[in-house]
Image (cartoon, rainbow, N blue to C red; front, side):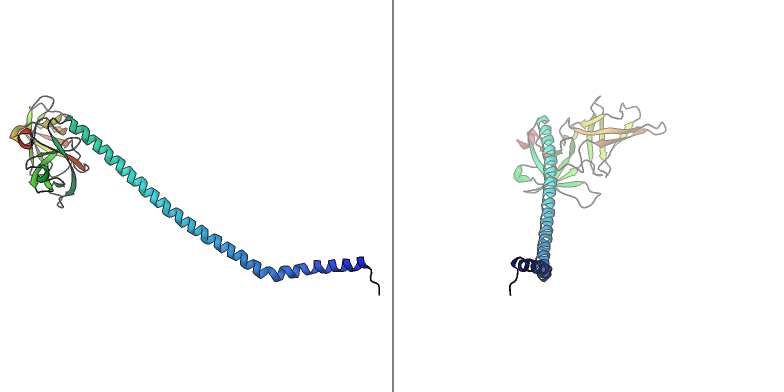
Length: 249
């Protein structure tokens, strides 16, 4: 029998076209599996990358915070070094490494001791003013009593006119009291109080406090006078221990 070739070719082409959907359907599970594997792999990669980025971001934030802390500390140290230039005697830089656990006791622990030449009665300053004096000395560390402690009294004078007074601690880091100030004494809000050098405990001329309140009551013999310490009692970390010529050569 003779079959016309073009007709046979056309029929075979039609058969191929008809079989395509069946091949596609039969291949669908495998292609679906491959697609799912790709999707899962991509999702896992994205999750891993997201976690890595989160970790990196935390590390970078920690570094930024550390850099900010270092920058602030360097600024404070520069202030302290500038203050040391203004001190005419030899000084030693120390670091506050502890504070008294009792809030009523204003004492700090400094990482300098007798091995560094520290002695009892030595004046302690920060970059802004007089903080206190050394009261206990160990080989490696020492304890300083702050001028704001309720047991501490400091001879001062008004820088503007030289009037001599005594500044007492009252147990709060933000305030000192000047007792027995006669109503007629020339003292004003804003006056700078400096160490007078009397009592031979503190060297003369160091900033101590600024007068913040003067209350004169004609019915009382003495005025009520408050002052704020110049030193940053609850913020300073580094301090200067001042050597007097007679003590610390």
